[in-house]
Image 1 (cartoon, rainbow over the protein chains, first blue to last red):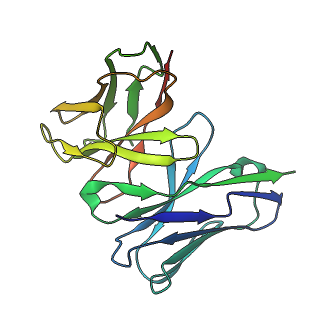
Image 2 (cartoon, rainbow over the protein chains, first blue to last red):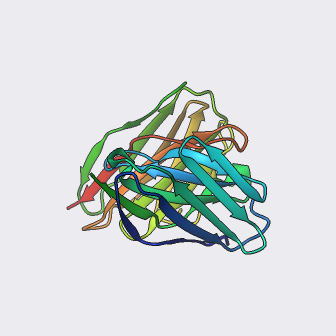
Length: 111
Length: 111
């Protein structure tokens, strides 16, 4: 069974700083790795996904995947107060069976 | 775009009661999911369905039944609500391994 662990549990950063989140997973045969953002009282929303080793950049987001070390990281450049949310790392083994989620990292960005 | 609608938004039940949660999606997605989100335990998969009338058990299926009579709808039944139970139930859908979209959730409290 896939296991997903996230660190840190919480992160407090000033506006304009970089937020860096980490995620490790247990199975190198995992398909895609997704990062979701969840605001209070809302469902998770997908931010970015990665399948191949290396990095992927979309706007202020950059994700790095290293399958050999079973590690993926998310970096949010120029963090804004509106980025304050819980960020969930999710791993897909089989597209039909859904995603396995980590417990999340709570990010707080202060002005 | 599309939307996932979950009803009701809030559900208060009594111990031992059978409770039904409903979900509708207009994405025309094949696969639908029910997740449970508890504080400190992340999202856990209860049931999923890869097509109309298909049902597959997730890791947390004990104590629940599900029904997928139409492609667009997926319902979940708590067969016997447990006293002091409090959780958020999230419905989701996806198409063949692409992004998983979530509804806003049904918040269950059992008194």
